[in-house]
Amino acid sequence: MQHHTTAFLPLGLFAGALVSGSALADATPLEQQLKDLESFQVIAHRGASGHAPESSMAALELAHAWGVDYLELDIQMTSDGELVAFHDDTLERTSNGEGHINDHTLAELKDLDAGSWFNEENPELADDTFAGAEILTLEEVFNRFGQDARYYLETKSPELNPGVEEALVRRLEAYDMIDTGRVLIQSFDQESLLKIHDLNASIPLIQLVWYYPDENNDERLVEWTGVTPGPDEITDADFQAVADYAVGLGTNYLYDGEPVITEDFVEQAQENNLAVHVYTVNDADEMQHLLDWGVNGLFTDYADRLIELTE
Image (cartoon, rainbow, N blue to C red; front, side, top):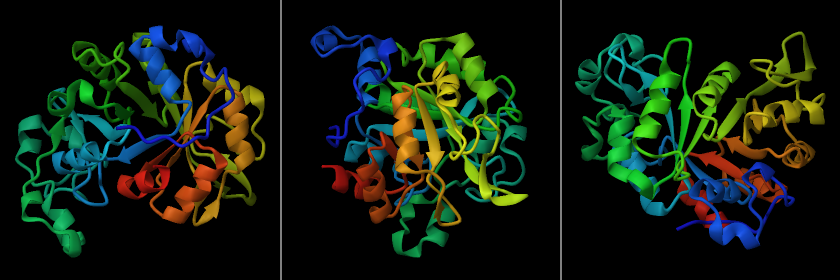
């Protein structure tokens, strides 16, 4: 079940997909996925992570049952080369483990309890079945949802996960997730995205950006990795440089409660063939505000709230 608003982008977005209205019936699944990015996407941030432990099977099952457009997960590598869905570089916040996730084997990670922390932090949402939740491998996620879901996967901290791009592309090809239009790959690390692009140019990519005030001049916004100038200084050429390899931009909306992007920024990105996905929006009024701007998708811990607004 898909939930779309009526806000559509100018025709010609993702022209590379070469899909016109009349040709849509003959569109490949990958072309259809790119076409769908022109309308609004509900992106379940680490699953239904406002309701269940983030990146757990319970959180993914719930979001999937609601009919979200994408299940969003961060992909990291174990010391023995397995791919797992886990956000932080270290284990302490969302498990009873210690240290860097990449220093542990899959077997060591599987022994951890990645659910009880949620019950302790959210007593009103606590559920005994969350206790003992396992850190999931990417294969477990694919084996559970297969072609019935779309996946929005982040190459997380590539400098700590050397080889993650090759391993990820291999898994995506093995599970036939690319030509079937099932996956987007996102990263803050431009080099990581370009590696993915070199390995398989068919995979649609999302360049993540984070805008915040320059520490030497808080009137001026800068981008965390320097992949673009700040929103006040960004040009069509800057957007086009991203559109050379990516189909979209994933951006924050607020920094310290203050907006860092405007409706004009969204429109300019779209005019340069980039979808705009905003992370991580949990407040219904903020969701509605961004919907009114015509953004192409929102990452949220509460996909149920967003679906209510977009139905």
